[in-house]
Image (spheres, rainbow, N blue to C red):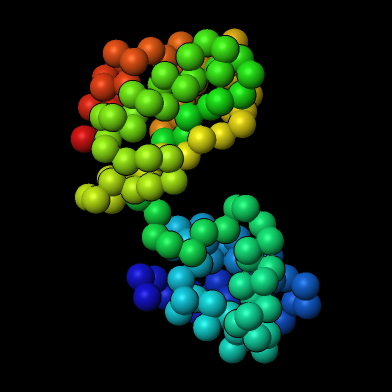
Length: 149
């Protein structure tokens, strides 16, 4: 396992009902919920692995595979859709050679579509990691990607 999760697990293992905060803390530490992490949590909290997966899969925030170095979120809310969000998405797919929900082979980028990022005045918008890029156009996609190479 990438990092030692023992200290994190110990902080929560005595608390009944602390599974979700524990899963959040583990994911924050290593970026996702690995099989090894789930096994450690299961032993420490005396909860079946299947129950942990049941809870974690209920919430969209948890992931079970290692994330890419950079996550690109393309907003397709009403304002972004009307102002060309689909075009931005298509440009990214062409530029990266992957579809929404996929990761580039070098694990540099993964792409998601989101319903709204709350920046309607800047539409169309894409977010790379936590950086918001507004008033996007097809030509700007290459410029934004170059910042992360």
